[in-house]
Amino acid sequence: MDDILQRYPRHSDQTTWQEIGEEIIILDVDSGAYFGVEGAGARVWLLADGTRTGENIAEQIAGEYEVELAEARTDVSEVVADLLESGLLTCDMSPAEPPPSG
Image (tube, helix red, strand yellow):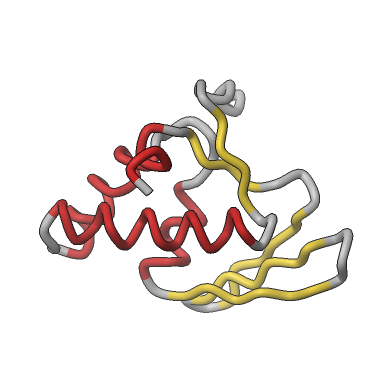
């Protein structure tokens, strides 16, 4: 799981998603399956844009949710691993290009 923290998670090209209240609904376009994440898992999804490592995401989660960094690392690793296994995220070794501003 530690390896996940060094990689750059991003949404899979086969997904589309919508934020509804505090929940993120994710559609796997290939399979037609829907997935829902909420709470810190939803925040991980929103931060997983390919420009941050899992470690960066854990640091942000720790600050936002006022939890120990070790706990945030474990939680982020588990969420990312679950989303990877479901094919909803991919992890790259280098950062993605940030989206153009403006």
